[in-house]
Length: 418
View: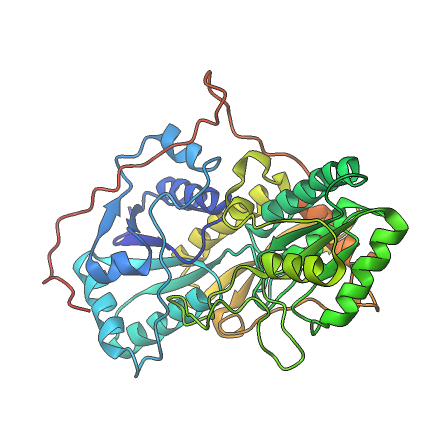
């Protein structure tokens, strides 16, 4: 049995398949006789020395994590600053790692998590502590650099495309005497990947969604309203998908909720659909409905993509392999080999090329008029939503999801005062 323990932590907004990655991490480590601890509520748990021993989990429980949404060990939104700016926090992390003989740290998250894992590796090297840090990709925003796609995105994309297609059928059925315009809000602060996935719901010129609004293109309200009215007159109704992160020409978020910030220091968004619906009603007089799926789009494990599940499992296994091989400050990434039939493999990328880099929609993926996706985008997106990874359902008609005991180990250090 290798000396030392492996610490796994989840970060940021959870996904339908992040627990599948956790499952793969635990199973792969167990196969190598490595003990796995999990930080309760992400990096906060590491700072607070709130560590969960996964050893008591049965093999069946670990397998069941793969079909359970949410974050089994808890997540958090906490962005650490530079090594100089947050020195005390980084040194506290290292003290906790030393206290529990943590030799491998796997941080499952997005851009900020990759940055944290990189900085922890740098501090450990500075102090001469033998620690291998691995970033493990996850985000429904699909905005991580160096990877073809991000585990979590495919399932959220599938949910989005399915939901928009179903809602569009509802709107079409009622449009003659009821709703003329429906606005669906998709997550995506700076990158329009999830909004773009809605484009898979239809293929023809008059198929929904009729208009997609991307953060990569400045929002022109007058042009948008004119487009909506034209679609209603031609088709009889209009389905709009708007990314939460659309901005006006001067760079302001259309859905800036009073300038509030989240725990990562990002502008708190949400409400673009209601804003757009209000403008359509006031300016055009059409009856409007809108939807804010919010957490639903990232937690919908019941309609998860099989491809996405396979990606999530693969990066978990690869992360353990990298860690035990001593490949420090790296992240396993998805590499696409072919679109049709879809082929892919896992490669390794340095964290310094992932951290604080953001992958937005390529220009060639957005239609020239700015309101839809191109054939190239469709070729990229389609394979990621393929296959259904249904969870097992119980006799009560609901999925059988697993909950793990989050009891933590006894602390050995003074309580964290941060």
